[in-house]
Amino acid sequence: MCFYVYAISSINLNYIYVGLTSNIEERLKRHNLGYEQTTKPYKPFMLLYTEACEDRIIARNREKYWKSGIGKEKLRKLKNTILSTE
Image (cartoon, rainbow, N blue to C red; front, top):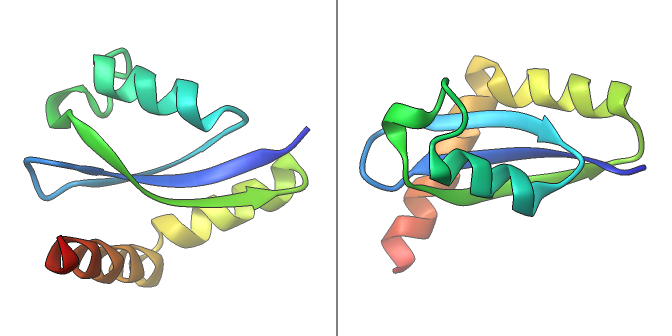
């Protein structure tokens, strides 16, 4: 089974969430429908970043990196780059 580390960004607010899943499409749908308490106040979301990992342990370590200060800073820069090209 493949696991994915993902980052989503609130479309209307300055909020980035990093998570781990085996089904990105379903997980993004759950976030946007407000089924996840942590992200519900910040919906709707756009998918900002995904990274495939061969097992859950590797994915969890990558998730921790993207949730760290340096990881979040890289995600903010990525978001700004995406928004400036639209």
